[in-house]
Image (tube, rainbow, N blue to C red; front, side):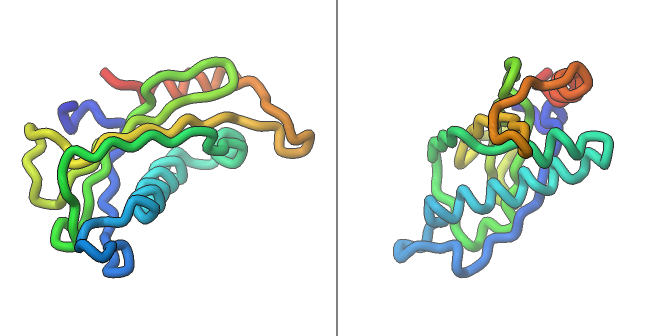
Length: 142
């Protein structure tokens, strides 16, 4: 995707503790780095969308590595957008590149997280409101 097509791009620093024994970013830590980017994005939405942000929980994560990422690639540039949404969930797409990677080149990692929205008080899924759906549509890929 072209950088302009992302709904949000986060700059996420890589910590030395994110590395595995081979000098790559550890898989479990990649999920954490994606979480940091996602939280920065969702918090940037403002109070109007707090019910969506506070009720979204991850139900599925998919990660495909297409290149190596190391400590020297810090900060990671994590571009995100809404791939699609349905009545009770939405899916966030990610393209992850090192700090100096070419935007036109293949990302080192692509990923998605499926987020379900829940009624926190009643502990069950809830439907997205029309306002939430409109917001998710704005964040969609061009």
